[in-house]
Length: 265
Ligand code: SF4
Image 1 (cartoon, rainbow, N blue to C red):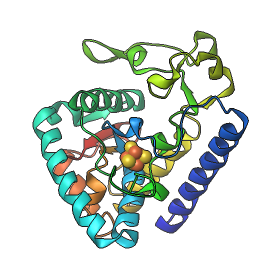
Image 2: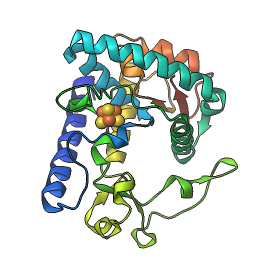
Image 3: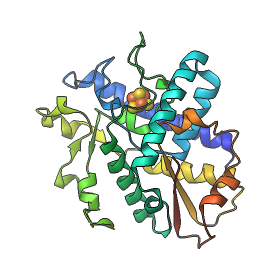
Image 4: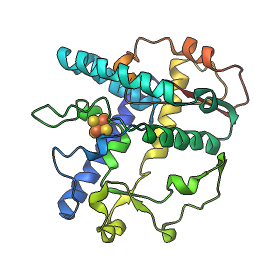
């Protein structure tokens, strides 16, 4: 698959998510998510390669120059904060199974939540809406408030570190609504909401396909790349030499059925 087809397929996923959440919003007036609410944006979280690539393309081709300069400066400050707070040697791991690679995503997420800084794309001074990358925002931002996470991080991670606990994906065990404190007394909405991971596996497949395409299939193993909303401001993903980038971070080529995780901060 070439880059254009991957991006087209990703855009279709985003459209499907938008249609699904718009329908839920019209059917369920109790959902408290309203325009100009940005509670969920007052935190950091991981994004994947394709999400970062798509947002970076939007920033570097569609964003107003002054807005871009201001957000980029902010992203630089936050990125330094993240880099000094998190142990990246521990997060960058190789020869992993896919599940272990996803666990690192959860670990990274946990670490980022502890930093307590708002997303660099959030501009609370803006007159119309406050997300400056709204049209290209990642999967997670689209499903917040409309989904239930049946596989919460607390179940996925053991406190000791990377070991995962075998928790079957099972709607019977219940789940947490992905949203803020406003959902505290709205648990009755849960059965009507969508799955937090809806279309996420399809997106992950496209993620790996894009990395393979941009590195000319140099690496036999799957590469899982995680970063934050800072990086699309700090880097133009279309200009980067990704083969060189990953060669510097991945010590060896391994078997096809393994994963290398690269965290870019
Ligand atoms: S990308 Fe936009 S919607 Fe998502 S957290 Fe950042 S400001 Fe909020």
